[in-house]
Length: 127
Image (cartoon, rainbow, N blue to C red; front, side, top):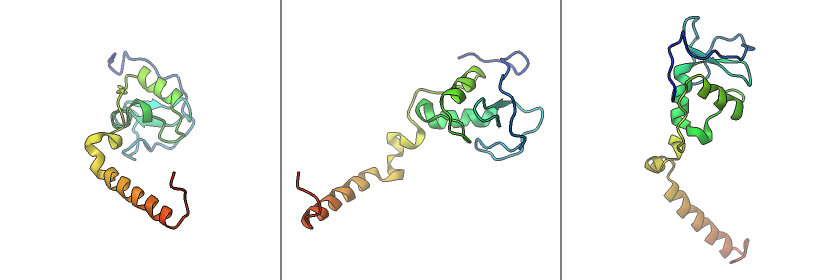
């Protein structure tokens, strides 16, 4: 992964199309002139580089996308070019250690019970 200082790093080629200075990539705070930002090539919105980096770490490559227009390809390519590290990992909300949050095991048991219930009522086949 390449790293750069703000002065000598790559320049974002996308043009700002949305004048709203609010960062919608996580912090919802106003973007000030001197802050490092990324302009999304898909929708023309500005985001704090730090917010995009945090988003990339949490979502992983499979789920990383523009927070406003959900474009994956253009946004990911631009972010990587601008020095954002996008790990090739599953999203934080889908990792095994966070399984308890979604109660996947409990959902599986409830689904099986529901299937048995539907079978008992002859709503679905036993196949």
